[in-house]
Image (tube, rainbow, N blue to C red):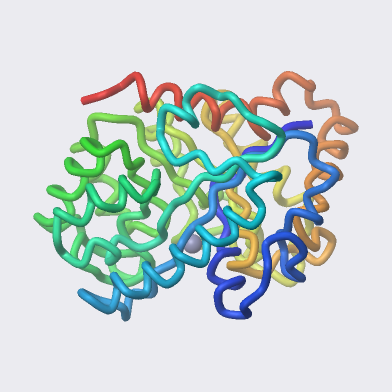
Length: 311
Ligand SMILES: [Zn+2]
């Protein structure tokens, strides 16, 4: 099987614990993914809302260097795809990494930073986390994008950095849908009609993203799968995938685990459970071709599409 995961917070945890990607004791490590044949992983550098200006930049730099070191040490096992054209070409040894950022405060309110991040190999950024930043508002306040947010969106599109709308407020998402000229991503958001958490997408938002040739990664966080997160099981992940498929999402649904950034269902301990999820869906009658799209190909196709839709 092949797996393309749109979001994890593993870098934050590795950096905090001075741990190694190879055999880290969290949700994700190279060893834990040994059962996955072909695997492309987006690694997010998470910037807390409280980090602003120079502090946000140095916070980012510290984690960027840690990520770079991990990529160097494991260079024979993981291919770090820095350029959009590398990802879009779809050529893959067996394992590849894509660098992303969670939290638009990484721009420090300076449009000039966006080109630098692109040069660093950052290929996707969430405009906000849950709170307010220079670009707009996360899910904690339902207010639209700020003027700097619109300007940053245009600059990100110019520099081949995918705009990620996960964590953004509903009003902000509406603004982004109206302004974006390239396909949009919601890297780690599930279905709000199954679990009413504001971090999840409404059916209308999902359909609007699909119409714009976007992509949505189902989040494995137990609090986003079930109202009572304690009761969540990996079968709820299948329900969210299935719900998006029922909205015509065959080319739009993908997976964004949120590994090392959240609590998972108790019967789905870490990335080593991915083949089990795949096998269970096969057993339930989902066709192999459809599963390959959800687990891998839709995400790969998104980056191809994104590259082709320049401006
Ligand atoms: Zn997140």
